[in-house]
Amino acid sequence: MAVGNSLASRQQRTGLTAYLTQDAVRDQINKVVGGRNGSRFISSIVSAVQATPALQECTNSSILSAALLGESLNLSPSPQLGQYYLVPYDNRSKGAKEAQFQLGYKGYIQLATRSGQYKKLTVLAIKEGELVRFDPLNEEIEIRLIEDEEEREQAPAMGYYAMFEYTNGFRKALYWSRAKMEAHAKKYSPGYKKDLEKGTKWTFWAKDFDGMAYKTMLRQLISKWGIMSIDLVQAIDADMAVIHEDGTKEYVETEDVVADVQTEGDTVLDQTVPEETPQAVASAAQTSGTPSVDDVTASFFS
Image (cartoon, rainbow, N blue to C red; front, side):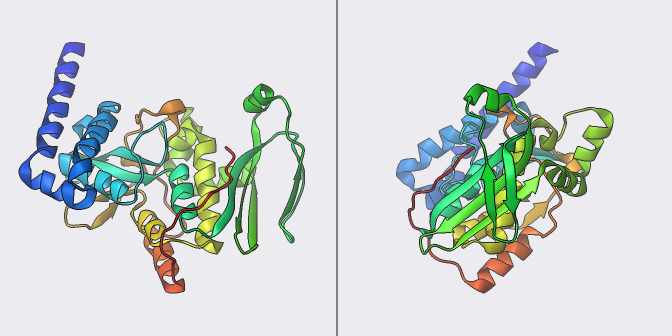
């Protein structure tokens, strides 16, 4: 059995490499990436696919479409960087596995701060015993951080805090308790509810709750009050979708996501059912107007 699986994996990887180096596909890649970076792009995608066995069974076109979007946003598919992920999805209606584009919380930070408007952008877990008070009216928080780093790392989270400050001084902050985040996860991720009921860890909320909480906090904060670049609007619109060759997007069901993405510390994001569709968030941002993308320095704690 092991020998057969190994052979199938080798054949799939070879198939992807051959597909990416076809003349028509290479021309498509060069239009987005540029000729000098084509080999680097192909190498990064092959490496990302090799790291996740289930991705090796996905259609080549879906892998390429998701990866080209990530490349156009200047984000890396490296699981260690956590900017975006290629997530295997079992499309039962087609009888095939496809690669889904999922934006990581570090991708949110990268895209948001490039607007040049953010002086600070912070998201972190508040550990048990650290919170003194949070004033939601004035959005002021007082905490006493656990000084011992190892002790703090091991302490469970009691809540999550996110804030940004513009270069012009405008500031916005948000705090959610662990209980509120749990309620949010149960409401918008049916698979997570099943994990809790069965004691399994199939969904990424169950595998890395903090990583999912960071993304949720940034999405809540930035999409409602932050300045969103054109790139960030595009990324949110495609988040949690299978991107087809014609550019259309298919937002998939939680139960069909294959939860075996290999990352550093299993930091990867779950398919959820958002309270606002990606299209609605993107449309609202486009209506309010978005700035062009520039460089900026951000303060970030994880």
